[in-house]
Amino acid sequence: MKASGSNAGFSLVEVMVAIVILGVAVVGLTRGLTTALGASKDAERQTAAALFASGKIELIRTMGLPADGETTGDCGSELPAYRWRQSVETTTVDRLHAVTVTVEDSVTGGEIFELKTMLFDTGGGTSDLSANGKDQDKTKKQNRGKNGKQ
Figure 1 (cartoon, one colour):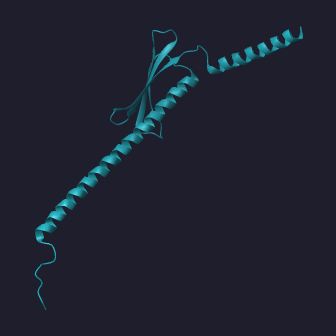
Figure 2 (cartoon, one colour):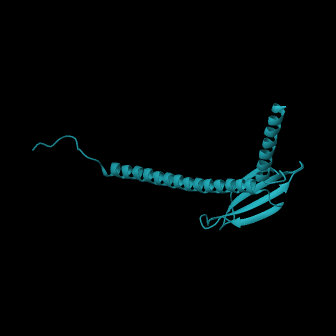
Figure 3 (cartoon, rainbow, N blue to C red):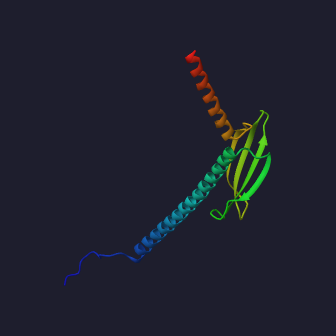
């Protein structure tokens, strides 16, 4: 057999450098995945809190404004990690109220999401307004019918 002039293969130093490079890459990849998963979980928490706060504001719009002041509560068994705080304050404009709904972490008390809006107090419920609107429409139609026959 004839011995070749070049040694084929890797030296121990080359293998060790390759292992170090691979180790650094794996650590970086793991850290990146951990960061991405944490950000995804945080976004999920903020989205749930934003939807809850938005629903609370819509409930206030539907049911009518509560008295000025602050109210607190938990978010129920479906969202046990959250609690809410609602604040209603009068403004300098007559019948205009500043409403703030804050959703907090029930364990740490840290704020997750805060939603602020301005609501106008109509004085009556929305059902009163729609009923009056229907009655006014009926009266207008009756008056038009009478005017047309004369």
